[in-house]
Amino acid sequence: MQRLQAFRFELMPTGEQARKMRQFSGACRFVYNKALALQQENHKAGGKFIGGFAMKKRFTEWRSSAQTPWLSDAPRHPCDEAILALDRAFKNFFEGRMSYPRFKRKGQRDGFTYPDRKQIRLDRENGRVFMPKLGYVRYRSSRDVPGEVRSATVSLRAGKWYVSILTAREVDAPVPQGPAVGIDVGVARFATMSDGTYIAPLASFRKHEQRLAKHQRRMARKVKGSSNWKKAKSRIQRIHARIVDARADFLHKASNSISKNHAMIAVEDLKVRNMTKSASGTVAAPGRNVRAKSGLNRSILDQGWGEFRRQLEYKTAWRGGYFVAVDPKNTSRTCPCCGHISAGNRKTQALFACIRCGHEANADHVGALNVLAAGHAVIACGGMAQSGRPSKQEPTEAQALAA
Image (cartoon, rainbow, N blue to C red; front, side):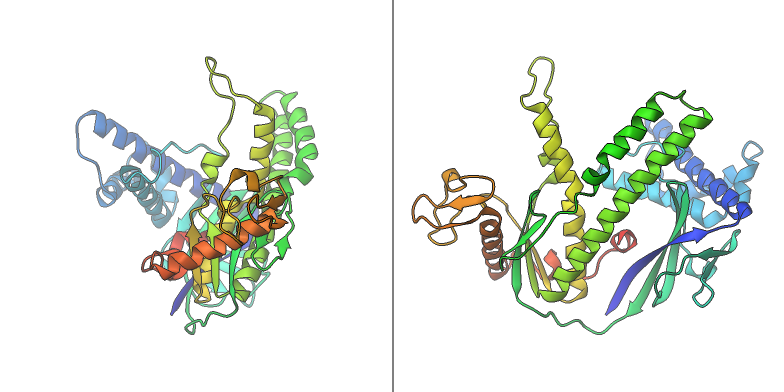
């Protein structure tokens, strides 16, 4: 079977290469915004939606226009990829999966993608990668890159350039190993398994919260747009990058360990976006306990439950296991011994005590047992196939790039 996997490295460009990467990123952003503006104008005029192929023809005209001659300095394929990205965004909007596409701003997710594998050459021995109009760019080689290179995405984050190299390789058909496990995620315990073990939370944001607030106050006292304001903003970006990197490292290690040692994994199908909605309410109907709910929302988002589930899903598929997402309703209120369901069973946040049979246990452990039982029921009824999806076993290219 074929496995798609992405490897991200920090780039070490020269001054000229860094200048060109900013230029190419700006060109892709310009093309994306211009195409979006054209779609809006066309819609107001009553015209039909302009497809990606037709929009790329417009881009050819923009490159040869006297008003935008600098577009010809940027490589063609990354700009075409920006147009295709907008086309995918509109398709997701039309199908109800995403909101309406928005214009891109400078300094937010700057980057570009080389989609043609024939134009990319990876020099593994010397730790450098060749990309059109950039030449060979050195990168910090921290691990091997197996497989055939498919694409390369260059991105800017916290003042540093990174490259994500997507590869494809043939691997042996995986054989799942280990028992089945149910997982209950929480704040006090990041993940509690049905076998009684649990993983303590990292709380990456909490560890840097005071330091982050201090630098945010310093930035607020500076004149916006000044040199000192930009320096303060750069410090805040570095703190955020450290928080994100620590959380990503924690989630990858946790999901890798769990998927490697279990043949079936059942998790709750949590709607994190709904769980972390603000409780402030409106002027006519203000909310209650807004400050407490805000703190809970920060703690939930600090755990990274959605990313944890995404990683578990594709890593379980890589190893041939079964991934099941079950309805979380009453998983923490159901007694695993007698099956009695009651809100009174949850005495405290940590204690479960059944009011019918008297069974007592850790509430998170009880939730994990119920999640595992629900997962077995879903598979027995044929509700979900391998990797939690009806027929697809491999992660998509977008999932592999985000890994």
